[in-house]
Length: 174
Image (cartoon, rainbow, N blue to C red):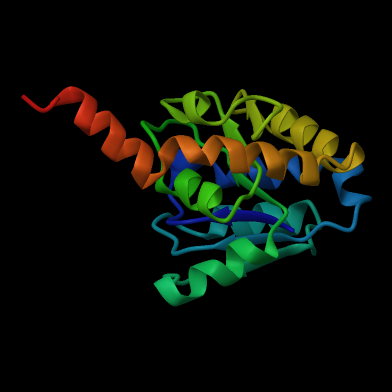
């Protein structure tokens, strides 16, 4: 299961993901794509892409995802994809770290700085072909377990203990 999570706006690149999963190698795999979040754009463009590409493996959950439901979506996924066209950072990335999920992120904003390429996931250009290549490599080489271990190691950088230690280092006791 591939998860696209959060508000759906043009800059978040859902259309790029839908074009990527139209790749014949991905379509040949038994992969579900779950899109979970509210549309802030006209959803017709996305529904047209699904229909035109015969993407019957795409499950749309066009609604606000309540806090108590977030774990269900992330726990069910193998891979979280953030095909953003632009970004500074994303809360979705930190949620994926929390649930120890590998990611495909695009090389925009600060996303590439917190997802080590080919360790905790993939950092790719915001192009359907590049997104598809990362998804195919992840599944073809069965990298989920290896990447989960790397995500577990990476997420320690964002622990409360690390944050407190860094704050204390800024303000040493007199």
